[in-house]
Image (cartoon, rainbow, N blue to C red):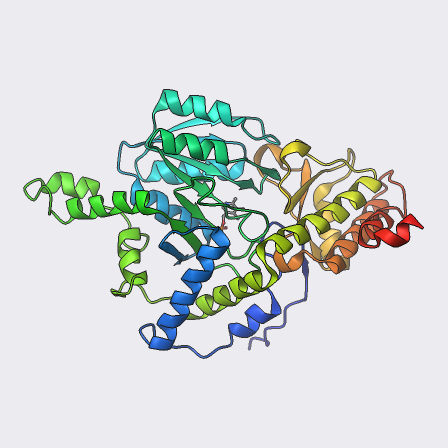
Length: 411
Ligand SMILES: *Cc1c(COP(=O)(O)O)cnc(C)c1O
């Protein structure tokens, strides 16, 4: 009745999902183990150790939550927000709106500050807002995939620590592609994504949090179970972590040596994440970030040689997503369709105020390689010419080649 699964091999140049590492896909063919099998718990421990290295943290707690990246965001915010808690969310794109929505769903009193899309915040502006609002939590996006901008975090992290505010960071787009220094930047909880720079399929959200977050969770668990105020059941109910699945205090017990049963771990996804992390650590964090920057440079040179302009403030460009303004008179969606149909390449459009205004080209993880950069540049130029855009022909790939062959281009 139904045919064999036989999907096209696409070149995925979106900000996720990106092409999975072949080694990751092979790891996913590994036989399933029971979740309390010592071989499996060893895989859990190794994954935690590798996550600490990739998050650049000494935190005890670093493990994946099952579900896509927003599952990790929801686990962190849902476990530390109690109804009425004040949360400051500075917004500079679509994913700041997501943080706001999730915090509101858990009963937070959210205060937003906003800056124009295509920019990031001057850290001093955020710090001033923190001093005025006095929130319990500041939640911020590190790499805004919707606009292609990256927010500097260290000054904000230091101010949060000084004011005893919890600092939660969405590092979904950046983890594994550019530096995310959890400890150095004084981030209390950070969430990554698998289908972005880790080159693992979507389905897990790696996260880490420190003892400041742990203290909040443990205090809450005590109250919830009636150990502190046993006669105030109503209050307890009001203060309990609302989600069972995303209850970080239970997940801690599950990932601790106690291995208290919670959910059934997504065995195959854990194999995939472990292999993705192993590849990252084999390559080394700094070489990996440098490789991403190098391909980004080739892409930018090619885009600019085509006469196209980048969207957003170049001073805060996100190295793993390049936002390109769609030239006047060109139908951005028709171009994307033709790239897919004729070249098997997928690039992304954008959301909200940027819909129809920019394309977003990802250079993340395994998708971020020379073959793909040259392919996307050649194809985009051809498709733009096909659509009658007034761009110079034949320059884009040459400009990228000049990045890849610097000695020869100097001759
Ligand atoms: C992709 C992305 C998300 C959402 O991830 P899902 O895996 O789709 O849940 C959140 N934040 C940022 C910055 C992202 O790029």
